[in-house]
Length: 104
Image (cartoon, rainbow, N blue to C red; front, side, top):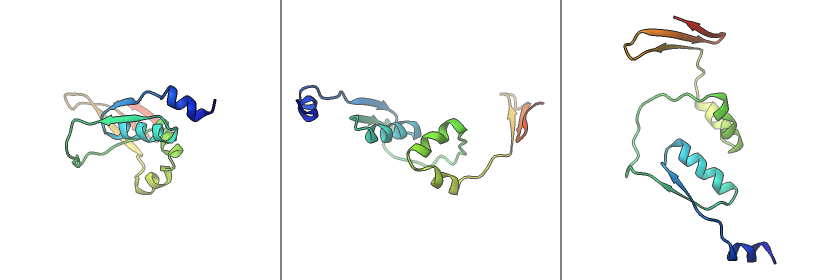
């Protein structure tokens, strides 16, 4: 029995991805690459620019590297050297500097 005969008798179920944001689209690309059927469901009917900054840690950059997108992301990215952390009352609770985290 060939692999195509097996696919016709037992097709793979389609994966449902809730949300067409960065995570949902990235998951769709990964499923596409390994030929797993999927559907992405998004509630919003239009795309809009939110104007917010986004940070990506080292754990996420590995996925962009696997997709062949890391070099493009690095071209348009700015490094983060310092970050101040605040609580809900806008009181500074700490800082992250290139050397590590410091308490406020």
